[in-house]
Image 1 (cartoon, rainbow, N blue to C red):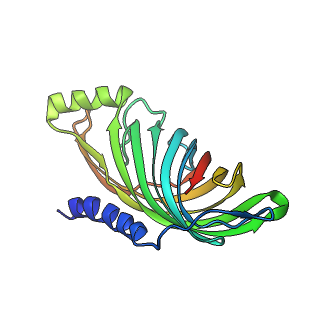
Image 2 (image 1 turned 180 degrees about the horizontal axis):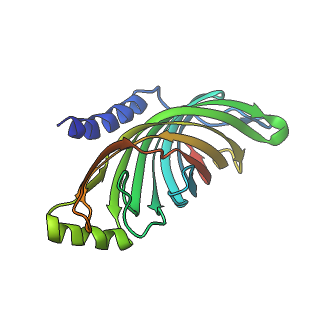
Image 3 (image 1 turned 90 degrees about the vertical axis):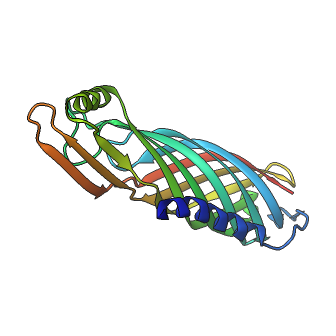
Length: 231
C-alpha cells in the first residue's frame, strides 16, 4: 500500500508544483545576453555511466519542461530512461546480491537551476540540484535466468527484486542560443541512487537457503546533448 501511494503521490506532487508557477512571459535576447522568461520544452540524449563495476554503461534519453523564473533561476521537471546490465562475471549467481540481469530505470525528477548569462560565450552556464523518484524494473537474464529457472523447478519460487527509490542529482550545463527561442544544451549530472534489493532462493547444488536485503550502489554519471524550445 505504501509503495503504491508513493508511485501515485510523488509524480502528482512534482507535476502540481510546476503547474502552480507564474504565467508565461515572452522570450527575448538583449545585447548578446540571455534575458528570457517563460515556459520551455526540452529533450536530450546521452549516456548513463554507473560508478560500480558490475553495472554496465547505458544509452540515456530524457524529455522535460521548465519555467525560466528569471534569467538567473529556473525550475525543470523531466522524465528519462536508462537500462544498465548487471554482470558479476560469475558462473553461478552471487549469494549476497542480485544476479546477472538488467535494471531499467525511469527517473521522474525536479531540478533547480542557478543560471549565469555569459555574453562572451554567447550563452548561459548553470549549476543544478534536484531530487526525483526513480522507478526500477529489474529482471535476471542469461545464465542467471537459466539457473533460477532450474532452482524453481526443484525447490519452488526464487525471488529477487529491486525497489523503486528516491534519488538526488547534482550537476551543471550550458545553453547556447541558436535563435531567440531555440537553444542547444550540453549537461552533466551525478545521480545519488541507492535502491533496495531483496532475494530468497536455494543453492541448486547444496540446497542451502539464501536470503539478503541490501541497498545497491547505483550512483551514476549522466552526460547529455539536447535542445530546448522557449515559448
